[in-house]
Amino acid sequence: MKVAIATAVVGIAAAVTIWKVTVLRFEPKIPPPPPSGEATTQPAKPIPPEIAAKLVPDDRNRVYLTKSEWKQILTDLQYYVLREKGTEYAFRNAYFDHKEDGRYVCGGCGQELFDSAHKYDSGTGWPSFYQPIDPRVIGESIDHDLGYPRTEVHCSRCEGHLGHVFKDGPEPTGLRYCINSAALRFVPR
Image (cartoon, rainbow, N blue to C red; front, top):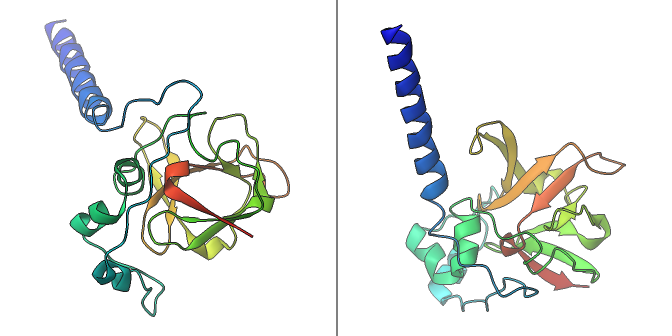
C-alpha cells in the first residue's frame, strides 16, 4: 500500500512539474491580449541589408538566420509564434476574418504559402485554409505540447512555425490548416 501511495505521489508531482514547464514557461512570453475587438498586429520592422541578403534562398530553397538576426527583423509576437512555436489569441488576430484577394506569405522569409481562394471560416478564430499553394512549401512534424499528438506545420524554407493541420476541414481535401496570423503576411493581388 505504501508503495502504491508513493508511486501516486511521484506521478502527481511529475504531472505538476510537466504542467509548470510546458504551460507556465510560455505564459509570460505572449504579449497581453489587445483591448476587445482589436487585432494583434504590430508594425513590421525594417530589414538591415546584411540580413536581407541572407533571406535569399539557397539552391535547396532554404534560408538560415541566427536567433539574434530573427529578433532584429521580427516583432515580438512574430518571434514568439514563428521561432518559439507560440500561439496568438483567437479572434484577435489580423487575418482570422480577412477576406481580401491575394496570397499569404511566410512572415519570416516571404515564401508564398496560402492563397485566399483556399481560405475559409472554420469558426476557430484563426485563419484556416484547406490546402497550401504547393505541398512542398509546408513541412510537418508531430508535437506533443498539449499531451497528445498534433501535426505541426512550418514553412519549408525557414522552418518558421505556422500552426497545425487537422483532418476536420472541408472538401476537396478534408484538411484544416489552422494558421497563426502572426506567422503570415498578406500580399494583395
